[in-house]
Image 1 (cartoon, helix red, strand yellow):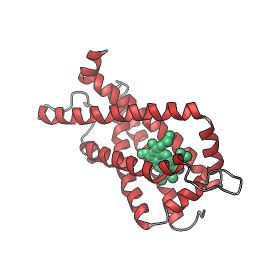
Image 2 (spheres, rainbow, N blue to C red):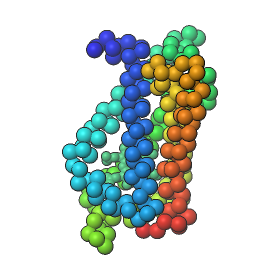
Image 3 (spheres, helix red, strand yellow):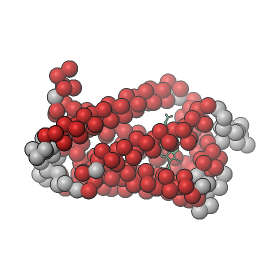
Length: 219
Ligand code: HEM
C-alpha cells in the first residue's frame, strides 16, 4: 500500500478517483441547490441536516479527498516541472490545452473559493445563526439570497466558477486516462463528456448568484 502512494501511477490514480468523487459531490450539491428555483431549498436543507451521520461521513470523506487531491497535485506538479522536457508519464492521448497547462492555477482558484464559500454560507448555516422561515425551519434560502445581493459576490463566484469549469474540463479526461479507461476510440467521447459536465456544473452554479443578483429570485 505504501508503495502505491509512492508510485507515480498510484498517485495519478488517487488524484483521478478523488477528483471524480468530488465531481459527484458537486453534482449532488447542484441538484440540491436547484431547489431554490421551486422554493424548496429550506425543506431540502432540513431533510439533509436530519441525516446527521450521513452529513458528517460526507464532510469527512470530502475533506480527506480534497486534502489528498491537493497534496498530490502539488507534488506531481513540482516533480513534473523538474522532469521536463520528458513531461507527463501517463498523458499520451491528451493534447496540451489552456485548461491542461493551468490545472494548478484553476485548482488553486477552486481551493480558495471553497474556503470563501464555507465562510460565506456553511459556517452561518452550521452555527445556527440563520433566522427561521414561516414554518420554523432555518431560512437557508433567505441566507443565500441575502448573501448574493452584492455585485462583488457575484463577480467572486463568476471568476471561481470559470476556474472550476477549466479544472473539470481537463480533470475528467485526465482522470479517465489515469484509470486506463481512455483508449484511442473513447478519448474523444470522454473529452466531449468532460466539457459537457463542466459546462452544466459551472453554468448551473453560476445561475444562482446571477438570478438573485438580477432580482428574479427573492428571499
Ligand atoms: C453558487 C452556487 C452555490 C450555492 C448557492 C451553494 C450553496 C451552499 C449552501 C447553502 C451550503 C450550506 C448547506 C447547509 O449546511 O445547509 C453549501 C455548502 C457547501 N458547498 Fe456550496 N453552493 C454553491 C456552489 C458550490 C461550489 C461550486 C462548490 C465547490 C467547488 C461548493 C462546495 C460546498 C461545500 C464543500 C459545502 C459544505 C458541505 C457540508 O457542509 O457538508 N458549493 N453550499
